[in-house]
Length: 107
Image (cartoon, rainbow, N blue to C red; front, side, top):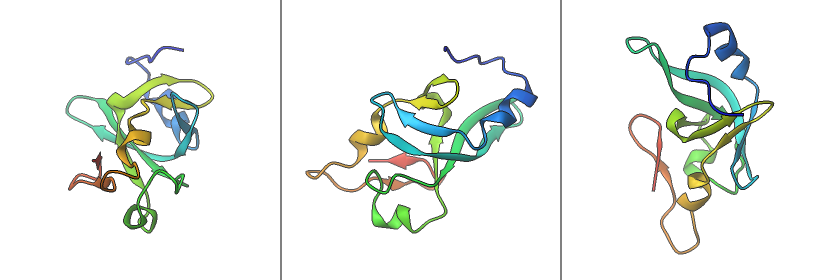
């Protein structure tokens, strides 16, 4: 299912509680809340909790959750599919991924 950027507000709230997976099928977390830009009337991020601890460093694991940019969303259906970038952010050869000042993940 393609992303419908013209989703009505009542449909946006149905995202809460949905599981988020990378496009490679790896569980990332569950949507707890949405980050909105009220001026642009758009969703800018997904606040995730119940995180897959294998994808995030210890600091992130001890926090309440993370916010992933909505631009990473590839598809919305029974689950939400995002780019595999979360999987690539932490590799054994690189530094851990850490949230930036706005709570978005950076490598």
